[in-house]
Image (tube, rainbow, N blue to C red):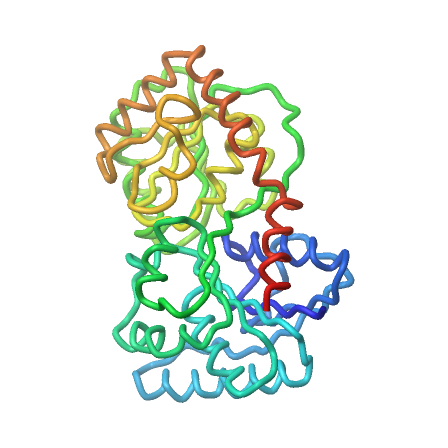
Amino acid sequence: MTICFVISSLKGGGAARVLTMLANWFVQFQEVSIITFDSSESFYHLNKEISIHHLRVTADSSNPLSAMVKNLNRVRVLRTKIKLLAPQIVVSFITEMNVLTLLATKFLATKVIISERSDPNRKSLSKIWRFLRKVSYHKADAMVCQTKNSQHFISKQFANTKCVTISNPVQMPFPKADKKENLLFVGRFDNDKGFDMIPSILNGLQLRNWTVQIAGGGKAFGQVQSEIDKLGLSDKVSFLGQYKEVDELYDTSSIFVLPSRVEGYPNALIEAMHFGCACVSFDCENGPAEIIIEQENGLLVEAENTEGMSKAIQKLIDDATLRKRLGVNGQKSIKHLSVDSIGAQWQKLMTEF
């Protein structure tokens, strides 16, 4: 079986991380290739046996007509590359890429699996992309969602297309460092990830000897950093940017915070659990509640309630016993998410055509 993964870029992010894990797993048994729309090298490790094809078609559009022309060209170039590679199965990640891949493979013999990587009900899409999703998704041979909520939404919209839930895998080193009094945020500085709420959350804490690390990049980076400075917390908070060795941060941090407004199946949360962090998350509509069992392996806080989040974090700061219990239980609760287990689920889906 030959498999081709399609994604806009491998330069970072949860979707790219999951795709590279799956590609590295499948290349042990199958011929694997990856198509990206940009020219960036992979932020994550890739097996040398995987062939990478950069289409270099990511130029920005200045108006709707320009966008249409550029997307038609992307479809044309992608179709040409897929025909040349002739994979038996194409797997695309993220809504816009799913649409373009389905258009590019129309009338080709290859089977297509599309994968939603966020909450499809709340994902910010323009009217034209919503329309294109509506008219194209039923052409997929199968759809993969990360959570039951997402599967329910997609299944109602596209009842005649096979849709399954497959969680994200965890593949990281075993914990080996001692925990420090450190509070960790990992993600993007954008509206969906809720990093703009970090200053309000931290302002409600008594940190004492605790420090804060924020790993990630994005457009709102400067604004959040400025607000932290205004609160007089700059000596407590480290902005690390996009951090490649993120496992080192999880390994030494005692508490992990997920302030997202919108999630798919949050990689950062399950990675933090793997390293035994005591985890607290906003109970956004999709994702965290399928991972966290309240007071058992983590804490859930009403979505966007920054005061409530501050109180939950303070509770963890003040109670070492609670932190330890949630960390240990968190590690136990995600053992079923090994890359071998998740890879086998993808493989089973591919053999059902």
